[in-house]
Image 1 (cartoon, one colour):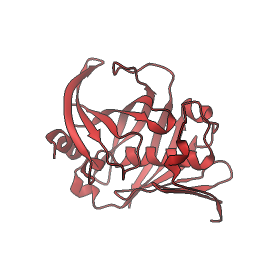
Image 2: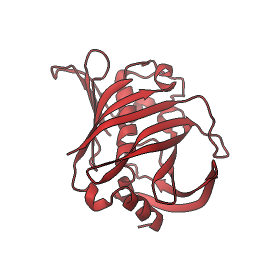
Image 3: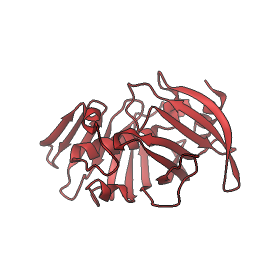
Image 4: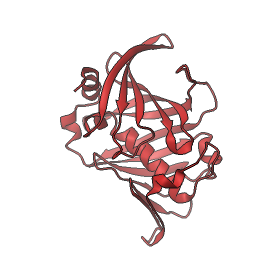
Length: 239
């Protein structure tokens, strides 16, 4: 494995520890301009999320004020009511975003798909770097706010549903993630700079609890506004 990838994984608790668990559940608060832009302002402001470790699946509950429950997998999305009755499904969800721009509204199943790929990627990182077909390459260091961060280019195989095929991780001197760049392919390849902080240790693994996502400029620098998405995690539990 790339030595920087190994350093980052070790800093977050190590692969051996991560492999002891099959899923993570957390309380989730979200804000930012994206949700209203996509026609779903407030729907995921405060919810709970469960993500599979390794195996790609995510559930959000409640999904909106009616207490709906989602299930995301790369090729299928379902939304159920609080009694478990299926309300909507979407097969081959990625294809449904063809031709979308940043301003294109989403259906509820499309929102569930986006929220699924996002939280699964974030909460499986950096251990996702060891998944079959993932390729890593160290890039030149990056200077930001008086700090020097090491950068890792990550290329994902088509089997993994995530924001974009190529993403970039930034790590501090200790190997903890500070920033994560990607282009949201399902929203017109919108470029994002995703800042990471507020680390806590849970059952031997380190997880950031604060995330802020801003637009990214062509030169790699982020814009200070608008705040596209904010994420706060609490009550993290592994099983």
